[in-house]
Image 1 (cartoon, rainbow, N blue to C red):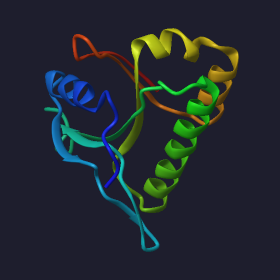
Image 2: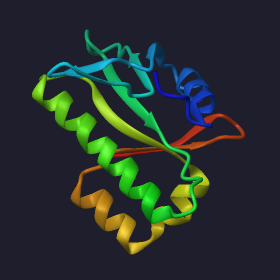
Image 3: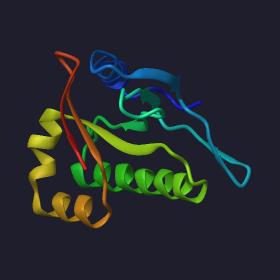
Length: 138
């Protein structure tokens, strides 16, 4: 089982505050005998829909020495998870959770915008201090 990201608990609390039910931490995503562990699986019932929404959230701190290296790792992991979810016809949507300081800093660079747009990375931007969700970017 992988170690929790430094912001794991802040994202979990932000989701709970936003009305999400946490159904799993270190959700097991299995494909071809291999197991991967996205950080959080959550569900939110929507009154107009019987099913509601289901999401998987991968939390990344971007505290490494190189923002670009962190971006490569985060997006690579995101794409692997998304490909497995698509192959399994999963009803879960995948999000990459990043702190607002990371979004307002490194994610405003042209290279980040290119990578996020080209790879259709969905973002959950959160404030680690208030443990609140600031925005969902699809």
